[in-house]
Image 1 (cartoon, rainbow, N blue to C red):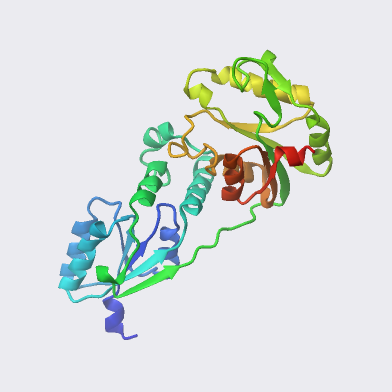
Image 2 (tube, one colour):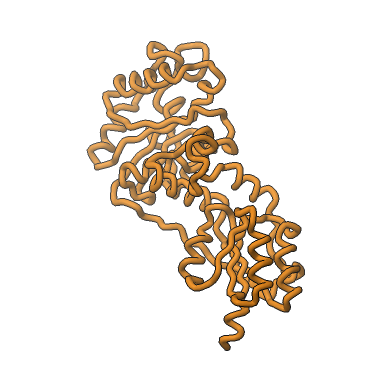
Length: 313
């Protein structure tokens, strides 16, 4: 490749929010001028670079899902006789969410909720609202040559699969470990907790095998104001007490809508939190549940899955 060709290289790095575009650019284009479409002045900056003629080694980090949104960049490059190359990161919606949640753990030491993302962390570029991923997924139009790309290259993504060495078993509480004696299928106060038969002995056996005991529940009743957070915590603690087991649990207190937060199963937020906090090896961690949601949660996080009837048989 001639020096003149290198000076006229325009690269469009395209993929989900959280897909790994920034790292890909840093690894492959350290000497290029970098623009990002999340900057409201991106188009103006692009115009100035093209007009200046000083450097046209430009990389554009792009979160724009539609062809119409991308068309202006392609049209402008053609006006200057410059080819524009598309690098399309193949990171899926789930893997992008997984990446975002790991950034949360690295940056904030927790999975931050929607209120925190739009509030105290609004200025932090790592605090991506889940709505951005949902928007991208809904409106995604894959790159095609008819748009005007000189080349389209699909860049594969490989998720890191081992973050620790510990084994874990993650239980859903309601209908798997316990049932309610009250008006709802979930307990609203500790005295409504009834532990299902055969649970304690099986759980203790896994403790002896070296498994970390964990629990995760969606608790939309808090959002619906059928249950207070304080009572939910008391019911988890009562369940552990009745089982005679120290299970570290986590819950999603938001509405039962995986599009509204990262922590609602089957989203990966609470799974990533467990992997980080307890140094888990996902491949040796088992989710024990009773629903398609639990199975998808396990799949999305890279965990194994067992139905509770099989596990406690």
